[in-house]
Image (cartoon, rainbow, N blue to C red; front, side, top):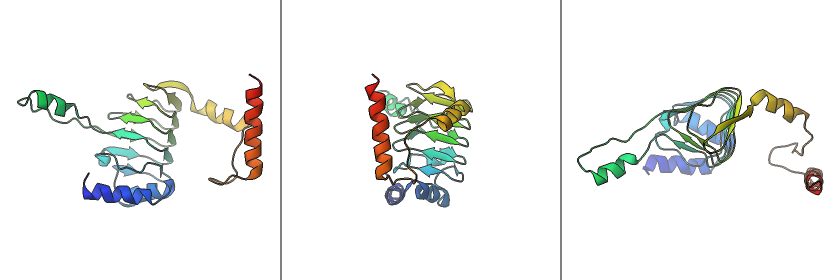
Length: 184
């Protein structure tokens, strides 16, 4: 890791998701950082200039952006005269996208606008707009607008203020949990 990447990584540890997005934008670390980008990650991916995050993008913790592969090292070690170069490629995430934690996005992928990527997914192909993707490899499992409508109607526990939970909210969450599990 270069000194610059080490300094950038330390800087990410010292801020919240919104501040991390602002830091990445201010210092032109990625190829593009739009407005209202939230970045939970604490590591700068290799070749970050090959990554574009458009407006209103939320990247959860432990999302891996794979802008390169290391296969050339294996081949060139086995066959020293091969001189196979390291492959690199771009990743682009369009507007209004949430990428769940522990997701891996491979180079060459564009995630269309209004998408949700489920936690733990492997995104190895483009994701069409207005969709929900999940799995290994990620497959389309739903429609963004249908999800929004369902979320608006559903009775669920929530917090009134981000990262602060009151006794009433805790009680409601446990009550709903117990009700759901008593039906089984």
